Image: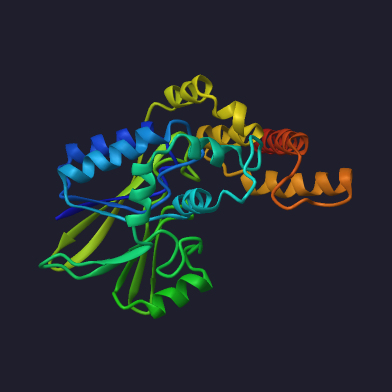
Length: 294
C-alpha cells in the first residue's frame, strides 16, 4: 500500500503536475491532500482541476487548509477590505479566479479526519492541527508534543509549516511531507512524501522533485497576479527560486518602516512602498550574507 501525501500546493500547478506524474510512475494506491491548494501562485483553477481529476481516478482524502478558509470567509462576508496591494492582492486575485464549484468543494472538506483502511492502523490527517488549520506544528515544538498527547491515533500527518520532517513523542509520530508548491529549504523543488503501509504499520518516504520552475515564473509574468499583488508577488517568486522563506523578515521590516514613516501601523494595510523597501533591504542583506560565507 502506497499513499501520496500532498500539502501546501498554493496554486503551483506546475509543481503539482510533477508530483502527480511521479506518483503515477510508482503506482501509488491513493492520494491524501492536506490543504492550502490555492493562493500565492497564478491560475488557481488549474491546481484545483488537477486535484479534482485525480480524486475521480483514485481513492482520495481531501481536507481544508487555512487558505481555503480565507476564501470562504471572504465569499460569505466580503467585509475584510481586500484590495490590489501587497497586503491582500494575492488573496483577491485568487478569489476572482474561483467558481461556485470551488466554494462548494471547500465547504465540503473537513479540517481533519481519521483515515481507516482495512489491514492498516488508523491515522489522523489535518492541515495545521486536528483542531485548527492555522496552528503550526513545528518538529519538536511544545505544540506538537501537546497535540500528539491528545491524539487518539498513533500517527498524525499534517502540513502548513512548509518544512518536511518526522517527529516521535511518547510512542506517537508526526509526519509533515513539506510543501508541493512553495517548499522551504530547497530551491526550485516540489516536496511530498509517500506513506508506505506494511505489516499494519506506516513508514514515510520523503521526496524533493525538480520541476520546471522557469515555466512557473513565466506564468507569473503572463498573469495579472504581479500587478494585483505588488511586492508580495516578488517575495513569493524569490522564495520559489531560492527556497529561502524571507516573508516573515520582509513583513516585520515593513512594519518597522511603516511605523517610522507614518507613526502608526494600520492593521492589514501596510503601504506598498514600505513593502518594496523592506523587500529590497532583506534581499540585499541575504546576498551580502551569502557572499560573506563564500
